[in-house]
Image (cartoon, rainbow, N blue to C red):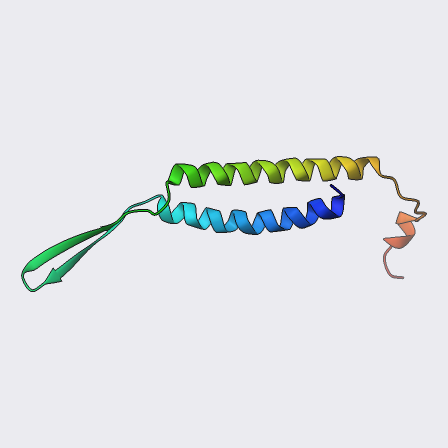
Amino acid sequence: MTINEALALQTAVKKRLAELQILRNQVAVKHSSNLYFGDRETKTVDEPQYDVKLVDKKVVELETFLFKVDAQIKQANAKTEIKLTADVDKLLESLQ
């Protein structure tokens, strides 16, 4: 995989990870509500549609991938040299 492909995939995975993190937060708790019809109370409980452990497992998998791809890109960048001549002191000097 090229660095550009990895960066594109990294962006897509970050979006998917954000979606799954929201889903994990939603399914982590059971929602319940009390409805009143006159003097009679009805309790409803919304059951999660997804197992929070499975959602969390996928989140961790994506976070692990993002860590690995970031490390690989940084390692490749550390090995790649560019030919650039620059006088840092002159470039960053204050205005006269």
